[in-house]
Length: 183
Image (tube, rainbow, N blue to C red; front, top):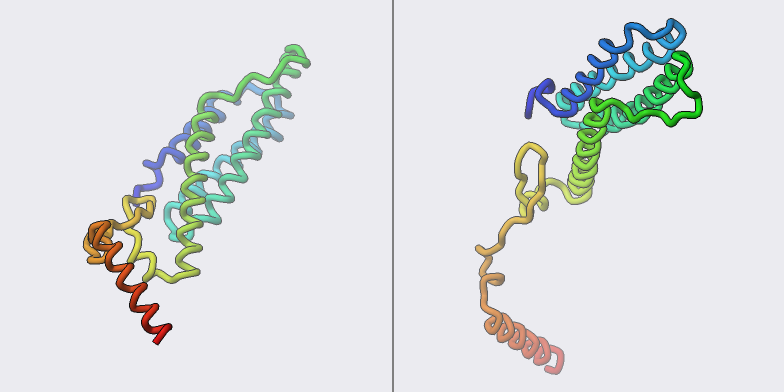
């Protein structure tokens, strides 16, 4: 398992937090103590959730909470940028400028972790339904992300038979079944 501060999603969230601290020192007080403070708190909480998700085996609840915070952070950042545009005397009808590249990078990395969350949930559900033994018989786990890859079954005698041999075997089994039913 990687150290939490080497994870791409942690780096992206931390860069966004640094950008907020660096760029928002000159904003008016009403915006600073409402939107900017809330944004800083959400980002700090998101970083803590990333750490917790990396440290525990049950990652689902921490990743889901961080994902919810990502949505609220995006909305809060957009609202803050619109409010700053109004305060600075810019046109009120102008479209909101796109979020900074740090947020875009964090969102793209977070989306890849949401895919990991779906795969992790499927793995946990299969373990609950079938237990760990059947999964280990049919799948092998690759890498840190528990990617389940089907095992090659070339060692099995039945699967390694040629097509003609399988057809002969099936025909023989059908004849035996007919003899048992008719006899």
